[in-house]
Image 1 (cartoon, one colour):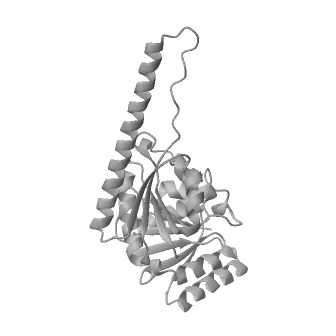
Image 2 (spheres, one colour; image 1 turned 180 degrees about the horizontal axis):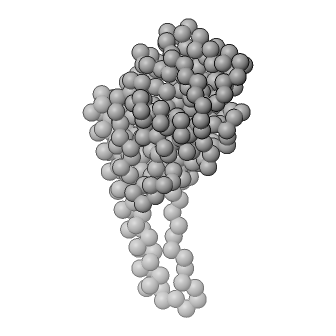
Image 3 (tube, one colour; image 1 turned 90 degrees about the horizontal axis):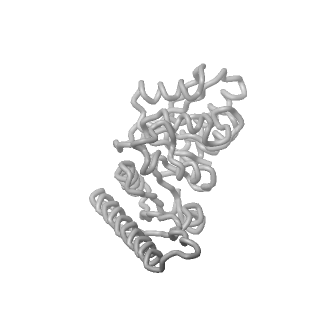
Length: 278
C-alpha cells in the first residue's frame, strides 16, 4: 500500500475505533491520514405556497440557517476529536476536512492519492440498526478501488491475521499484496479455504503460501469443509484472530456480489476489522 489513509468519521461510537485503526495502519505504513466528515447536501425547507405569510417563511429560512450552523459546528467538533485521537497515537501528518456534498463524489476526487480507506462497520444509527451494515459502508465497498479497512467496534492491536481465499487466481493477487505491504510485516498470517479443496485449488493455495514465504511471511494453510461465513466466523472467534482479509470479487460464493452476500455476512459476523481487497 502506498499513499495516504482516508478515514471517514461521523460521530458514531465507531469513529473512535476508525481513528485507532487509522493510527495503527499509519504507523506501520508510514503514511499520513486524511480525516473526512461528509455532510450531505442540505435541503432548504420547502416554500409554503401561495398566500403564505412572509414572516413565517422568513422564520423557516432562519431555522434552516441555524440548523446548518449547528451541523457545521458538530462536524468541526468531530474532526477535532479525531485529530486528538490520532495525535495521541503518535501521528503528526494529519489533515481534517468538513465536506458538504456526496460521499462517493468526494471519495472519487481523493481516491487516486490514497493507499487505504477506513470506515466503521456502521454509522450514526448503529445503536438502533445492529442487524445491518451502514449504508455508507455499502456504498463505498461497491465502488472503491483502493483497499478498504472496515473497523470493528473496538480496536485491539493486530497480531494474528486470517486471510480467506476461494481458491481462484484472485488469491495469488491477494497473497502478493500482503507480501509487499508493510502493514503485515511481522504478523502471524493464516490462509484459509472453506470448501472441498480440489487438486487445482490446493495448488493455488500452495502457490499463495509460496508468494508469502518469498515476502518473508511464513503462513499456515487451512482447508476446511462447511459454509464460509459460519466456518470462518467460528475460526476468527475460537482462535482469537485480530483481522480478517478478504477479496471483494472472485468466482465462488464467498466472493459473490458484495453486500447482501457472504462478504457482507462476514463483515457483520466477525467482531474484528475486515480488510477488503480488490
